[in-house]
Amino acid sequence: MIPLTPLDSANRALLEQVRPADWRAPAPSGVYDLVVIGAGTAGLVTAAGAATLGARVALVERHLMGGDCLNFGCVPSKSLLRSAHVAAELRRAGEFGIRTMPGPEVDFSAVMERLRRLRAGLAPNDAARRFAGLGVDVFFGEGRFVGAREIEVAGKRLPFHRAVIATGARAAIPEVPGLTEADPLTNETVFNLTRLPPRLAVLGGGPVGCELAQAFARLGSKVTLIHKHPRVLDRDDADAAMVVQQALMRDGIQLRLGARLSHVDRRNETRQLHLQDGEVVEADALLVATGRIPNIQDLQLDAADVIHDIRTGVRVDDFLRTSNPRIFACGDVCLSHRFTHAADAAARIVIQNSLFALGPIGRRRWSNVSMAWCTFTDPELAHTGWTMAEAARRGVALDTFTQPFEHVDRAITDSDTEGFIRVHTRAGTDRIVGATIVGRGAGDLISEVSLALAAGTGLGRLATVIHPYPTRAEAIRKCGDQFNKRRWTPGVARFLSVLLRLSRIG
Image (cartoon, rainbow, N blue to C red):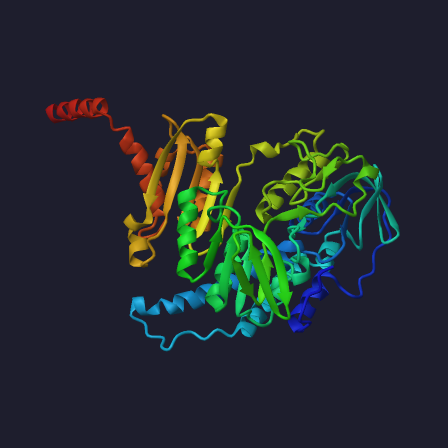
């Protein structure tokens, strides 16, 4: 288990909530309607929802309740990003007529103390005592299957009618000679830092790598980001990812793209990263952000007849049911979309499908979910629905409408015009199938398009939505205007001209 350090008042307060030292496990209460293994987002939502509906629920957690999101992911990372963003804004203050000479001074120790304090403040939402108060039996320890209908934890047997695997995933460490010996940081340890690394190497140019590379660069580290692909955020639209990539470079990050690590040497406190092209990158700390692998290694899934794979995790069908029809899974342990909100959405489906599939409510399919996501760099990059590449794989022709922020009044007055909004519709219709937004506040702006997509609201209709002026959301209306103008064909113009003449006669 990863220890939380330093053990200051904030971390002690966190542990008191998510892993109380004096916790006494309850006596198992017969056959549970639902036993949930894993108390991250997926497990907590499942357990709370099922208990609220009257089910008898047991929740098993091997480490800290709250999982990655609270302890090692969303909460601490966004707290860190906020401090880094303030530092970056202060450096730009002169553009707005504000003098801050000689410039901002970053107190990294205070930055991290704030992070720990905010994290502890949110911990009661995920606390063991809160869930016990909901009627959930909370057990700490390694949960493992001892049969198709029974789980064991800390010497106690928990028989169940249904079970849910929600054990999440952990950082993947590539098999590179010398990498493990270099004591690399991951998302599970980087927030334990109390001193800013003068030189930081980041391995991986996905969302986690880009977010943390930019944060540490803005806080004062000399950052080198190494990525095996030709550009960062290679799963996103190329031109949107390029906007982020240029921002990283403006923040002083040295990019080594299309680069692969040969081996790593550690000499005292210096890490030497040898690239295959012969270049050597020296750093005082190394952060690995090259993906995640599911936590299934100690579950004894074979005993429960659950098919699984060490790389992709637990195999589920469209109803999030495993090969054992009494056992479901949700969250990072089984999904390709490894986001907190994806885990939350999957948990809600699992509650319905595991407890009420035979009733009048019916079952829900994961394939009907339209997934949105956001990388919280500055600028942010958000997406919902299909990408252009996915539409091409499906053989679906698109019409695409793009509105650059450089023509949006609020972006101009904010001196923050980089990026754009792009909406895809099925060719010849206004049916929205996907959208990408890159720019300030993209993570919030994408929700309006996500709602329209889910509700079947067409892009033309979005042109009629009244947005407060001036806001960046005006760019969405402008995309709707583009669609409506495309319908203004010469034939439509002639028809309307006739109507206008007739109205004059009347």
